[in-house]
Image (cartoon, rainbow, N blue to C red; front, side, top):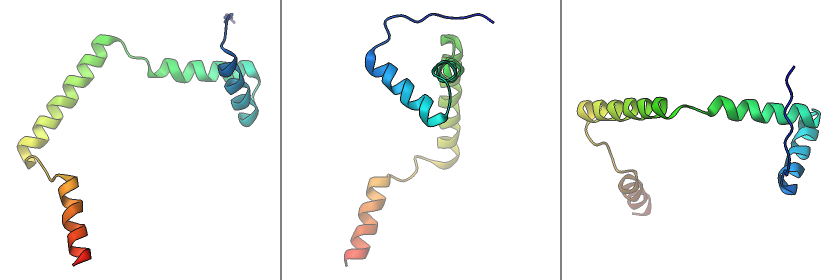
Length: 86
């Protein structure tokens, strides 16, 4: 299996890694691999990120067309507080 050497790890990061490994009952190496896997699974190429953002924007616009702008939550909370206090 391939290996990776990481140099110049900041002391605070190494301490956090050790604490996490202890809490999860893992070796330091297993904890580092787990953190790398979790981080790598969140990575997305820039073109995919743009596609995702465009899809979100399109969905928001479709919801707005179907349902309108919605209610301002701040104004809704103010109205509810007024009712309770009167």
